[in-house]
Amino acid sequence: MGELVWIFVSAMVVNNFTLALFLGLCPFMGVSGQVATAIRMGAANIFVLVITSCCAWFLNTFVLVHAPYLRLISFIVVIASLVQIVEMAIKKLSPTLFRQLGIFLPLITTNCAILGLAIFQTNRGYGFLQGMAFALGAGFGLTLALVLMASIRESTELADVPSVAKGTALVLIIAGSLSLAFMGFAGLLSST
Amino acid sequence: MKTTTPSEDVLRGIWRENPVLIQLLGLCPALAVTNTVANSLAMGIATFFVLTGSSVLVASFKKFIPHEVRISTYILIIATFVTLADMTLEAVVPEIHKALGAFIALIVVNCMILGRQEAFASKRPVGRALLDAVGTGVGFIIALLMMGTVREVIGNGTFLGIPLFGSSYEPWVVMILPPGGFLTLGALLLGLNWYEKKKAERQMNLFPERVKTGEAA
Image (cartoon, rainbow over all chains, first blue to last red; front, side, top):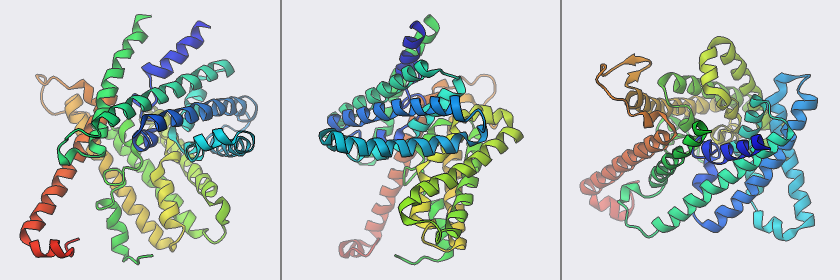
């Protein structure tokens, strides 16, 4: 149990996917304009990450022992098709949820955080439960980074920044400072 | 669609529509692996190989790829080339392969590559697709090298492992850590914006009448 909590905390803050590993930057730049959208995007991310973790575990245990060179190809195909199926299922079962997740669900499939999770999980040899903890931690970490970024951007909306700094340059520098702050969590690793 | 000359196809990707600095595509590798010049170069070359290979293949098979499943087909083609690049790097330069880690595999989801297939290679002849891929790939390598040089020189005091400043230099370790990636790219974009602004102002001063009529594009 302690190990699972540890994997969760490590993936969420110490090795935050966005701010320490640079995975999932496209949504981080693209949809971090408003807090409400950021939360929804984060929720969709957690959802897809958990599914991915299941898939990757299944493929690693039952299929890829016979053909390790197909790892990358099978990961991407299986994840993309499963997300498609889940999307159709949600559309049928809960139209409200579907409308809330909207365009984000299919977009997430090509997000590097998703494939990154599958690959990291494989490299570290996680079992099913460890994979779940890892996926949840990574998902909450992404959501945390997105929401923090969105709230900062909402406040800078009306600030009078120099004209050269408007747009992406400012977002990147804010992200740099956030990333600096998150590095403080690295102390958690050595203190235990 | 606008017609372009072959030289435009190459040059466009290198500077005016540079994938990283202007279009902000493929940011994950551009930030994650550029802490040394050697890593940046390896990543740039691997991406270049995948991009040209898949562009040529997509352009040659575009008549056989059904429109409905084109994205999945592109991803399959890209994933095949990435697997090739991954195995080659592991065999030829094992220490760099280890340093880049999972990011070689993540070339598959680099939106820049998929973007070029969808926007260009799937509509043009093979030769043009190759030229476009070469231009975009070189642009990507240039951007990665700019990031890598700044980060290694400031963060480690070395260039390709050769010490530059002597032993009294205290390296800014933060530049080779994750925050340095964000800050370096932010600073590069600031510089670029400033340059564009100056250029626009110069044009305004030289030809004020053209700006008014909207001819100075």
